[in-house]
Figure: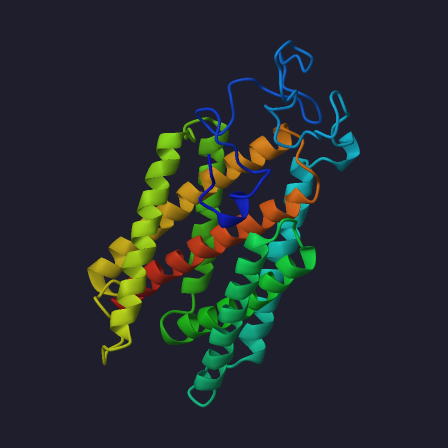
Length: 294
């Protein structure tokens, strides 16, 4: 099963076997799947159930146990990546004023930073290995964009809307994590297919709306960014982000379980950061519409 997150669609965080991305056998990190006999007669690949196994020779030891990804690795890398986003967002908030005299300049810098962050994200998504420097650079430029956007919304709509969006994002993250750990959410092929279909439709619709907004004097396109429709599509975006989190949790869990190389924890941090940024922006949009209508 492939993750909705492009950084998880590479080798290591996906398999096309099994109902939830892996077969039913539960492997040990750093070794073959439990109950699998690597020397069984007729076995062509003794580590076929483990995408991280070394296949240089039959019975070769896998990744040394100290070199495999752990939950602590994922947490620490994610904290570093999100911390970079937060720090650069705070700096841009204070160093790039959004008053009437400087709004145009600050907005231009923010859009430029967003484009750079997008390019860096795409480069990392297609790289064979994680690049910590590239991931942290993406986080820094993304933070600049978020800082200016957040400062603008706080200045012209409501001073408290940014804090509400941050708390809302944290609540979504905590809620999905609890639901996933309690197995209230089951990540299956059907779940994945539904989320991917909905995400593709959502992104295409937003792209069409953006295209129409370029020719619309009011800049609202088809009306998907304001009023009742804006709230509706914002809520849909948040729900999709929550689904992405569930997929990401599943991929990270499987990566840890199968003994992924430690460097893959940077990809986990990158993917989780992308999803959290998505949720925050959608949350900010919904709250901005609600506050603006007051």
